[in-house]
Length: 261
Ligand code: DGL
Image (tube, rainbow, N blue to C red; front, side):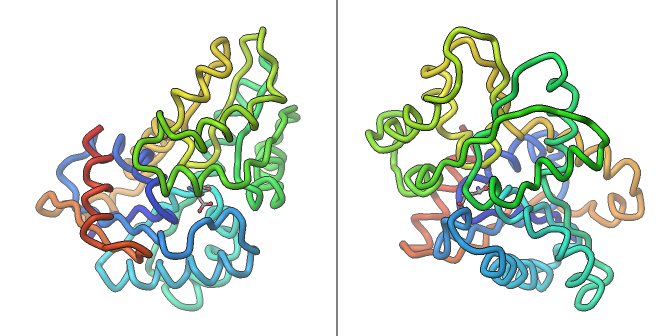
């Protein structure tokens, strides 16, 4: 049995690799739906259809637990968990990354000003507000929708010297104060690859990426669910399933390179 990580593209690697490094003995499948990205600029129904299609493929490839390493896909998680999984794959588990990130935000938002950079669908879904309300935290934060940023990161060969990536990083950090030690969450997994550029724009900000939050949450989940973790022990392996607009082999090589950064 494998653990699956799903994203619309390269973003999820930034989340998956921390967990995989800490747990090298499991078997993994990384699924990237590059052909249909950006998810963040699609409707909730489209994201639901694309995500459940990918999940079906991942379950067919022996994934028993899938992490939606994508905030945009995680906005449709309630519908997946409450309606789709019980009807189609009652034995499988799907986890998202918004709830654990909201828990982290809840720990900081009462002391610090918090900004969240996210895709348009994530901001429009108000998923972070809703999760914080469930945690019962009155947290004040500012969300900034960043159209195009994930897409230019996905298409770029070298994020840090890419003029378009740099342009959007400058544009979307404009509303963030320059002179205060505020917290900035990159709530789109693609943005992790542009973290250095975002940090340069706001040197005093504490930039928080979801990678270690998700790795810790997933480890805790597996220690609580020994029935899953015991079934997962397999010869260590990392394989890929991609839906690409470009050449598959080239894209898989790109994913592999990102896993080694
Ligand atoms: N990586 C996805 C996320 O975390 C967004 C990329 C996209 O728009 O497809 O939201």
